Image 1: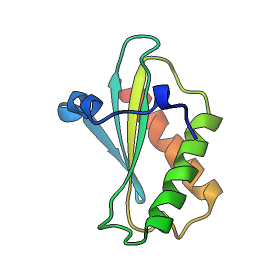
Image 2 (image 1 turned 180 degrees about the horizontal axis):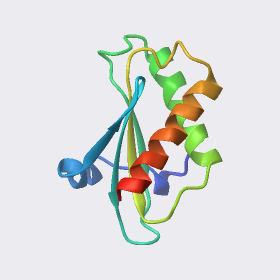
Image 3 (image 1 turned 30 degrees about the vertical axis):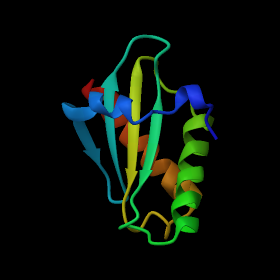
Image 4 (image 1 turned 45 degrees about the vertical axis):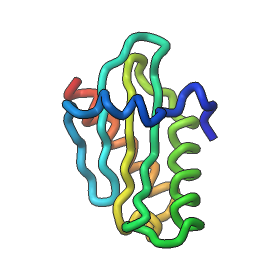
Length: 109
């Protein structure tokens, strides 16, 4: 799990009104630039996507683990929204898809 200081709050989501998206088959990534030291992350799993809280929490824990495992370029705040089918793939496949999306997002910024 990421430390609380590195997780986005509800107030922080207002920053994402004018941003771009990177879409992959199982996740959507939004990224914005922030000052050094203000990097934060959020993982969103909708209740309409997965009805069971156990499934939503499992996906959330997996993504937070992936985010904590890989160092990212500074000055980036990310939100990851998981889509249907994210639970059907392995942890490694989810990690590869996320890293591919991050590379696309960094290139566009």
